[in-house]
Image (cartoon, rainbow over all chains, first blue to last red; front, side):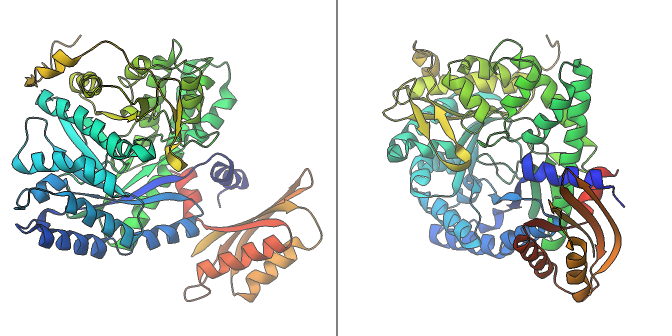
Length: 452
Length: 89
């Protein structure tokens, strides 16, 4: 029998250290839902999702009760909607978002990801239609999340799409001005997007994925934070070892839940995503872990090195605990969703420039950052271009989820509520990048040897 | 199905008897049991076997947690697999 200490340790992790399974995400292919008539297409989408995911929430809740581990979110990702919408005759593809929203509501999931397009080399007719529809789609639906991949290491950066995304984000903010531009929290601009990410808002069901799949995202910054209390003042070797062991335990939990969900739903298991995803709850913060390593505040010198160690140790610990690891797999540093990040940003100790440097060594990018409402579309595009460049040259996924909050200026604060948390408005560079963005075209794919 | 029952709370007379009676009444067999008292706090851990076709897991879980709430104890039941997954390779 497992000894009492181990049992009590597990219970303490769940009760006091916020250990949970962050999400069970069911990926569903919608490739067979294409139809020239958009109404028929929407009906097929709705029918398929509600059929496949009928038992998702109930099964998740059952596993939660039996194992005594909270499963915070049950979600769905679908084939990038641009692919499904490609053969629709209609010019306006907002109804597809509405169909996804209705289906999500019917099966009881809180978010559905995949109102997406992959345009790293250029747009097809379907992609263009989808990009045009994003602002209205996000403003008129509640649960739909959108993502656009604008760059890959193999294709380079599509600067026309980058420019377009700046305008789309501005327009989405304007259409959701009453909610402080919240629509922008549901759109992610990617470089090197992954096909099996279970986390929102960037989840979509890639074209290399099976018909239906279960991916699981674990969490647990609180558990790592707690474990590190035992190695105060110890050398980094100890810190890395402790994080690895903790990540192993967290991931084993994810693997167990993933296999159980897969078995009960009769859907193949895809991956466990080894991300440390924080929440705004006190004690569930990635920033706290970095500060445990001896930084007075996240954002000061040493932050990037601390984050690199954390990110790498989480992967090393997690890889052995799961049969298949995938998705984003890295520590997330969303500003509004992490109590420690919020604290540092409020005091002006954390800048966008430092966050950008941090994204070089962790997943997944500039995430949930609120910026002044008057920031121009070109400046937002330039921020996206910088972040995409980091991803493209380093062969990793990067993303931008940024919210130009209408009517707010640097120093103000905005509260999105729940898991989205609150965000201090961070200043952006005042000088123009407009001519840079106006050039358009593509930044060529980088050389992958002669690395320095 | 094997599961772990944990009882945590302030020590008093009859905790073990109450929990065991509830389990026996529902035909749940106790395979192993250990208990300690630390700083007045009582901690009991039991490995139990719920027979096939026996009481529904959710129902047993509610019975245990309700009986705990009445007596100011935290009583929970979780499938054994979660502890094995976390602590054994």
